[in-house]
Image 1 (cartoon, rainbow, N blue to C red):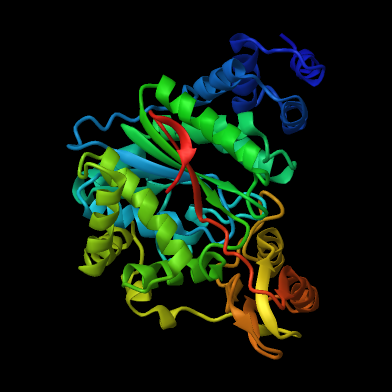
Image 2: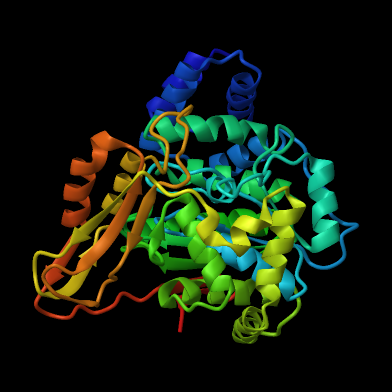
Length: 442
């Protein structure tokens, strides 16, 4: 086989066989196929798509490119959660210790920031000393000991995805349902789980901006998981404004810690509790999602979830003193206020624009080898529906970069739309997909 023939076939809308997909992915992994040919292949898939069978083949090839973890000696039903990525989406950091505190083992393999969205790994690694690059043996040991582990992909787990993932980020091929599906499910199926809860974002700050596309992605992920013998529940949740108030790696850790200590950030905690409730139910510790939500709220209130997070940080090499004393962390050189020029109500906050501004400030990557500034980011002072007066703070942003302040301030200011009329608050959890089908979440 020739790589260019496979690229041409997909470019012209042809259907690839399992052998062709395997040849291409494994050839890229072992260095026979260079970055530029994989980039061309990704772009061809982006424009031409893949049918469900091709997507399943791609998932399987990426899954089998590495080690599939066996966690059968860890008691209990192992459940993970995956979000397709949004702005300010720090749910994993709050949810994993909640679910583990409820007695459900959570083996979590997360990704780095993609495009304008943050990544759980980058957030965790903003905690001084926190190690996400554990070996498979260490990964198994940590979950056996504390019922929770949060790592990145190792060279052993879906290594093909790890290599392709970084390339997708910088070749503008992120928003492709087959590529997203194969990437997510190859990692998730490799980590040793029995069940999975999916949070598929929709709206301006999501990769899938239209609801129909989000639904297609959710159904694809759900079906792949089911076909591989896993119990799966998928939700479609709103990403038209950032989730919570903080955007940026350490800033999101701070907000997560505050929530684990009992602070109620309404939109963030609503989504977190629904997803946690579903995980607790799939883990056999509740008979319904509603009962799971009550258990999740209880372990936050009792302080058990916060203690579990401290345990995780310590066990994975992090300096717990930074979590217990959040103000100990170094501050950015610049903290700049963005103020309202109008009276009225916040009608809209452009989540995509907020995400792009956080990249400009240094909180994300525009190139594969970019170094992230963990301190950089944005804290919103107002959310959609809030009343605002002229001169009142809309947001504060943090950066060490002198040359981005003017652009960041202008763009962030324009991301807020102020109206004289109070808007309708968007529904946070829109849809659930499970064994009973697709229906509105009540």
